[in-house]
Image (cartoon, rainbow, N blue to C red; front, side, top):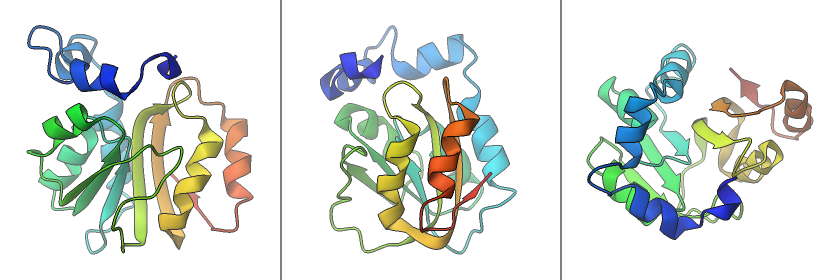
Length: 165
């Protein structure tokens, strides 16, 4: 689905006054960012920064930041990240997570959170590419549409010992 919508689409969707991303999410009672953040807080520590993969407008990262977590975000839409910049993020990177570079990133993260990008735009096995930025004992909290639990076996087989919550 999202392959049909390039970054420029999401840039515009982030800021349309009458029907932007957050208005649509609220209208549809989109709870994945809140529920994933609440679950993640049971496992993430506040000592190490968290990477919000596919941060969008910052719905999940804002919750973590408000509870004292240090959060960095990455998304391919500059427009979405412009909305996220006021939500407590330490750093924001505009990168396509299917081909991550994380400009100037020197941080190896102990935890990732990601909501709503898997199943449509990003295939679950593409999360493996982000493991270059994850500690060997890292924890990953994610949610997505049409994510088949069987697909997690690919991640579990990765050399990095991921803890999926």
